[in-house]
Image (spheres, rainbow, N blue to C red):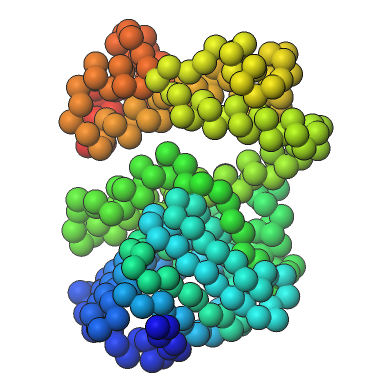
Length: 329
């Protein structure tokens, strides 16, 4: 069975509670499922929304966006959804958003249909923001993706829905900190605003890195690009005990020279540098998200020497693992 509702009908099912001028929540509990949303208004016209839902039936919501010039940054932590946008120039008629990925879109003045599958819990964090936010910072916009530059300068009204790739370890850390915010009232506002700006920074930087990778990929054959991405996937899966350079080259079917050169060109770092960066990012998460000792964390991410691990961690993050846990925990 499929439930079809428009946004107005769906909103009428919610019970809303406003805690203060800046925060509130909505909750839905009905025969076909549950949903909740927590919203926080921050400075600079930033709105943070944390949403969860699970339906026993497929739900299709029909909605119309107004012409407000706001962007949406979405981080999908679990579940997924399909959206159809008939007859919208510049946007796919039918696209999916999947768990573990993040998206940035600008879709004013459109009609869309959101498809939520049955029995799939969904959790996402969204940030609604105005391109003027970027204008409030000093400096050139030349390092920003072209579409953002054009929005800031009011030289385009082009709509877009931009998939930016997997949620990175750094993003996951910030998302977890948002969900577990330890403060209330004024301090909560300050903390969440800082985390939202950090998350937007990471997302826009990821978009820029994606564009750089696209330009680099022009120098390699499609099969070589696929093999290099395969090498990266192998390293992600064997972090504690990665293969040697020669072994990795054999696994992906390239010689070691092409692997070394291609990896640096495609991903902007060496194979060893990538492994080290990945290990330290995982250690950063373990320091905040677990009660493991420093020695246990060092071993889990692949370092036998605690002193060497601590040296590399401090060189990367500016503080020792112990001090990082004490300051950030």
